[in-house]
Image (cartoon, rainbow, N blue to C red; front, side, top):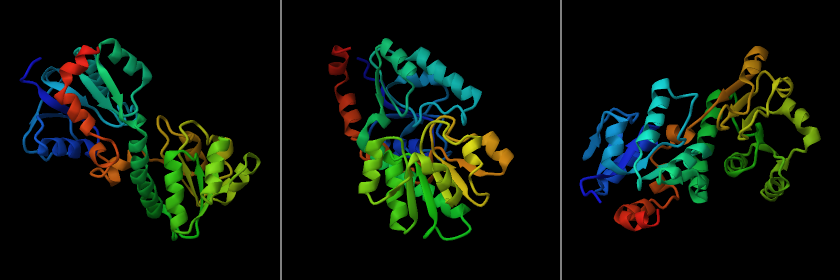
Length: 297
C-alpha cells in the first residue's frame, strides 16, 4: 500500500462539498480538492488541476450529491465524470449521492468500493430538513401573502414530502397530500394531513395556493396544469427532469420553478454528512483499514 496517498479527495458540487473538505482537513486528514464552488482556499487542503491527478493521489473519492445533474453541468464537467471512471484504481473507495445504477456497476467491475450516501436512510431524513426549510423559504419569497392559512398541496409523501408537511402544518397552513401509495396515505392521515383522493386531485389543484412536487416523474402535464390558478406557484424538487411539463407551463402562464439542491443552497454546513445523520466515521475507519477492505475485493 502506498503511504504517500491523500486520504480524501473532495470534488465539485455545491457548498456542502466545500464545508466537507474544511471539516475533514480540520480533523487532520489529508485532503485534495478539485472544482469546489467557493474560491476561498481551505487551510491544509491541496488543490489539484486535473481529474487524473486527483485519482492518482487519493484513496477515498467524495463526489457531490447528486453525482450527475445534467441540467446544471457543463459538457466539460460531464466529460470529467467519464474521465474519472476511466482512471479509477482497484481498491479505491467512492462516495457520492444518487449514483446511477450503470455507473455503480461499472465502478464495481473495476473493483472499486461504491457507497451511495442517499441510500443511508438517516442521511436522507436529515437532508429532508434542509430541503423542507428551503422549500418554505422559496414559497415565502414568491407568495404575495403569508403562508399561514395558505392552501398547500404536496405531491408525494416520502421522506421529503412528510418533513415538508410537518413544517407547513406547524405554521398553520392547510395541507393536502397526494400519493398513490396506500401506506403513504395512511401515514399522512396519521400525521393529521388531509389526503386527496385520486378523483379529487384536479379539483384540489384549482384551489391550491402553492403546489409542492416531490415525485420524480412527469406528474403535471398540460392537462393537470390547466387546473392551476394563475396566482398559484408550483415548486418542484423532483430529481432528474422534474415533475412538471415546463414548456406547457410557460405557454399557459403557469408559475412553476424547479428547485434542485436546496440543502446546498440554504443549509450547506448542516447538510454535510458528518453533521446530518451519516456516520462519517465509517469513512475514517475505511481509511484506517484499507488493507483489510482490499482483502475482500
